[in-house]
Image (cartoon, rainbow, N blue to C red; front, side, top):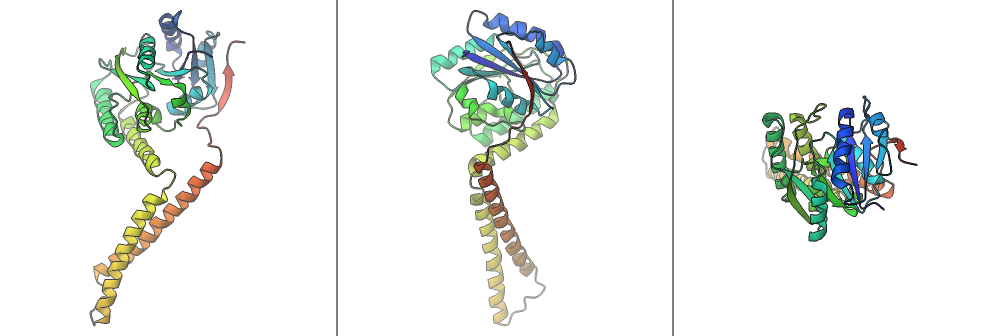
Length: 312
């Protein structure tokens, strides 16, 4: 077993592969045993063939059948990682492997579950990267009630079992640290290096902030009500139903005692509440049955592997 597995999802990063491998080898050589798992996320350039040139006892390539996004690609790498610890890095050379031994040492000394980086001197554009990142991090901290300062930092080191228990999809990789912290994992945060992108184009922009927030809301809902959505929908539906029924009973008494109720807006509101209440409760029941079905069957992986290349 290697001491650490470094999982790197790459998509059209052919010019970054060689200097990235050199950076990792220089930082980790003779310091610890490691494997680097490159996951080619449906690249349309020469990324996969470039990685194959460097395959040895430390380099593994997983090629996916199609582009599934960074979360799915990282999930593939994590599933195939064999190290006692698992690190993640971006494939654009903006992270520096020199931070990995320091992070791993802090993780061991503090006996925590993971260490995540903070890009204190970010080499990114202010309007399209820094400001959206600040907003997203603020929202994540408020929703998750955690104190992860830089969820977007790609370099992190986890105890293997922490990531093996996590299921990545959507943009969930962006807040792996916050999600682990929500589940009770202990952590440390340290400043890390951040270099400007030299080759290729960034895959992130303003639209990613909205996607991150949407996924975060979904994950927060799943954590609280994932196994029992009926607790949420049933409660809301019952309150709406009772409100509608109360209005209609009130109108019924008015009618009995000679009042005129036809055509009054409050009657329409009462009927609407009754229908919406029934519909909300029905939604909760349907979701409950779907969740039960999912738990009874194996979860489908968010990726399909085309081939795995490693040293013989």
